[in-house]
Image (cartoon, rainbow, N blue to C red; front, top):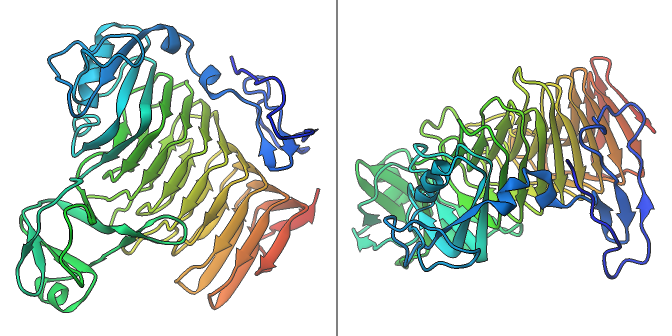
Length: 446
C-alpha cells in the first residue's frame, strides 16, 4: 500500500491541491497521488519508506563497514551496531538472502570500490531489501579512489587496467559534474593533448598540466555498478552514490511486479565495455509497479540519464520528485536524453532540473507513454546542431505545468517539439527556443 504523509511541512503557509490532468492515464487505484503546490514547488505527499514491503523495516539488519568490517562476521545487529559488521556490500546480500525474508543492509558511510557492491554482478539480493547509508553518504565507484602516479615524461602513468572513463575529481562543472578527460586514440595523441588519457594494455596514461595527487582523478573501470538483473522484489536505496557501471550506475532489469524506491541517491558516469554500445546512468525496465525517486541525480551517463522502458512487461509508473540529470551522452552516442519514458510508461516529474546533454533531447516522451511534468526546468545546450528541451513523439502525450524551457546555443533551438505526439501546456515559460510540430503532432493548452 502507498502511504501518504500527513500534516504541513514547516515553513509553508498553505498547499494547493493539483489534480491530475484529464486524459492522463495514471493508475490512481494502485498508486494514489495527492500532488500539492507550495511556495517552493510541487510535492507528491508520499512517504518513501511506506512504498516498499513493510517486512523490510521489521526484518534483520545486516551491517557493512568498509574499513573495520570482516566478511567472516555475521553482520547482524540493531540498526547502527557495526560491532559484527561485514566488509563488503555483496557479503551482506548473501547473508540476507540466507534468512529467506525481507532485510536491510545498513552500510557505514564511506568509500567502497571496484567490485564491492554486487561482486561484479554475481551476488544480488533475492528478497525485498533496503540498502541504507548510515551516518552519511555511501560512495561506490567502479574504480579506485586513490592512485599513485609515476612521471613518464609526457604523461603520468599508473598500473590500472580495463579503464573506461577518466574524470577530474577536483574540478566540476556549474552543475556539479566532474570534468571529463578526453580519450586519446593512441599514446602519441595522449602525449600531445592536455587533459587526455590513453590505456596502453594494463598501463593508464594521463596528460594533465601538473603532477596529479592520489585523489585528483576519478578512474572508472569495467565493473558493474548497482546492477540488479535478477532481483525481482521490492528495492529501496537511501544515501547511496554510485559512479560507473558497464550496464549503468543503476540497472534494474528483471521482469517483476514490485516497487523500486530511492531517496537522496546519485547515479553517475556509466561506462560501457564497448564505447559503441553506450548505456544509461539509470536504466529501469520491465517493472510492473512504481519506480519512485526522491532528491536523486542521474548524470554523466554514457547515453541517457534517466531511462524507463516497459519492454513487454506493462504497468511501469514512475515518480521523480526533486530529481536532476545533467551532462548525459558520451563518446559517439546519439539520441541521448536527460529523462526519457518509452512504451506505455506513465511518468510524473515534480520540480526536475535537467540539461546540458549532447546529441539528443533533454526530456523525451516516446511511443505510447504519458508524462506529467510540473515545475520542471530544462536547459538544452547541445553540441550536435540542435538543442531541444521537451519532445513528444509517436502516440505519446506530455503535460507541461509551470515548466521552463531554455533551448539555445545551437543552429536550431526548440523549446517544445511535438513529433506525432500531443503536448499540453499550462503556465509554461519558453525562455529560449521555438515550438515545432510535425507528423500530426500538436501543442495546445489544458
